Length: 450
Image (cartoon, rainbow, N blue to C red; front, top):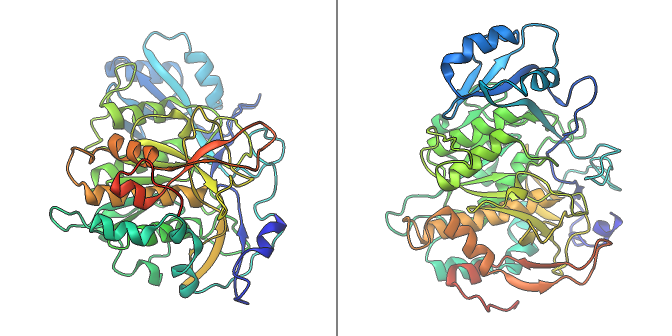
């Protein structure tokens, strides 16, 4: 990763480089002793809710759910004995009363050696953490010019306010929380009643931790700062779903998306991933798009559909990373590109589920404590697309012709700049499109790179 030291803000002595991979991924392989999941909980969907007491009694679970979503209901149930969640999943496999059962998986950092879907490297690669940067550097960085953001503001006639009623579009950031007092967010946050911390269960989604001690610290602030640049007049809804170590459970992530839907969000950004699909989130995403999942499950809790931008992952390979690999309409998995329109070497890519790239290499954004700094990863590319989705929602605020999440994300995809990346990775040719804000708001499919 020494390439960063020769590229970033050479004119500024205080410039920093955070070299990180995507912030949050899952450890998805069960072991003999259990799995990477909450060790005392299991997620169960029953065909008939009347069977809950009997099922709970048979498998030694507390019949009083810790939470529930959907119809038929998914229940989060507490294990009352020494069974592991994996053992309960196996035991329930043949029970006709049980529609689905899975562990409450823990999402965590990708930088764990031995996983074939990550680079298996430490959080900070080849660089130490240095605090620096400036608001001026934040406002003048390369990516805004690359995607012609200012030109898009002029063409769209908005920077995040709906063109029908001049109310701000709302973008939910589901992450490690944010620095609520950072100057980059002054006047740009939703009301305290619409924020939530699902880690500490309160309405103060502030980042928790310290630099150099907690590797995930600052991630949510950085992501939110990119969105604040993309749509300066929009509102940001901070939702903390990840612990100070960057880990979060499946149930908490589901709850965060439902919260965003119920509290007025139009767009949501997720910098999370895992190498295997899980049913609860699969059903939720299908219901967000279609109103029902492929097996008939519904989520009455979802009051409005969300346009979803998801980081593709930093495995530097083609291993599918979920939820981005779901490829549902209304959601885009986003790979990272460089200032030279090359695929970032760390970025996951597969033409079957990654359709766009966005700048994600050495992006300057906010950090806790009123600071600014550079960070690299597909986690930085996803909020560029989330911000562009919010800009389109502001431009086309209704449900037609382009106001629906599926229409918004399809337009971002179809108007992206067609490019064949020249730095071919070991797994073959890369033909991805880099998003362009001006092309998107003007619907110009032949818009060339300036």
